[in-house]
Image 1 (cartoon, rainbow, N blue to C red):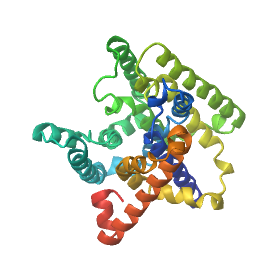
Image 2 (image 1 turned 180 degrees about the vertical axis):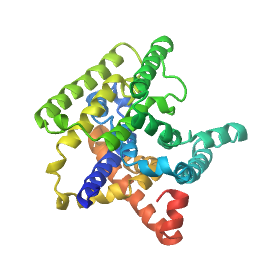
Image 3 (image 1 turned 60 degrees about the vertical axis):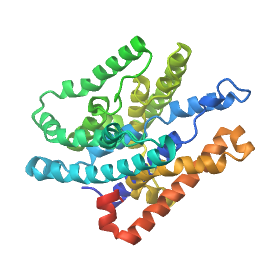
Image 4 (image 1 turned 45 degrees about the horizontal axis):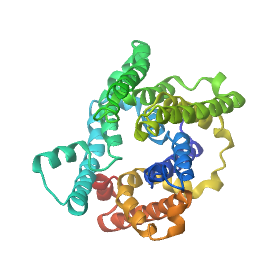
Length: 347
């Protein structure tokens, strides 16, 4: 049974995750690397190594909160869920395509722009929806493998095998291959684990051992930081060093998931009302926030002290972006009504 407190806890988690997503998309430290303010680069790479888990946990939660009974008993469930993802995805992909053509490229190539619109390539966060659509379509098969206890190991090994291909390609060509984060094998292990936990439950021996969970978290975080700097020092791209799709990032994500499960009992409902509110609106913020990231960047770039201190710049950028995103959600709901706004824009 899903209790109200349990729902509140996971909404709090979603609120925390969406703030971290905005933080990930805020100003990077790459431009500081060779400057007198190079500490900003080190801060940024350490930060990215420490918060590279929001998308993976969102996908885990999507699997965990899948209505398994509806998937297996009603063929229309997948179609309805895909439609609920696809309509706002196409809406926002069109919005970002229009913004990019109008303010960035100022050039139109109908064929290329249409392909980018269909794939959500005009905004860096929309790949998440493409992945969710793929995983949703696969849900009946994935659930069947768990219930029949067939191919479970193969499903869990799909992502590690995919990671090997990412590392091989990056080592061979010096960059990640096209669409590497948009393909479902990259994230399958998290969605499948969410389904496994939903159907089989979380292992009690693990969830009851808080000290081991904390030790696992600290070791995994250290590994994440170490791999990021190793990749950078070996001459690979900064994008790969800071990427979410790395062995250490995935191990660290599981450490964070485990920590969230084992320390769930310490959640105090009254203390996190703002974060739960952000969690309630996390899907909408995910769609809209990249409209306001460059707006906040433009506003803040005129302040020298903020440009010199990246953590401060990011703090204000996140506050401005989240605030404007929430105001957009509220205003859209007032104009269109909650049901229509949700159907078209995802909020």
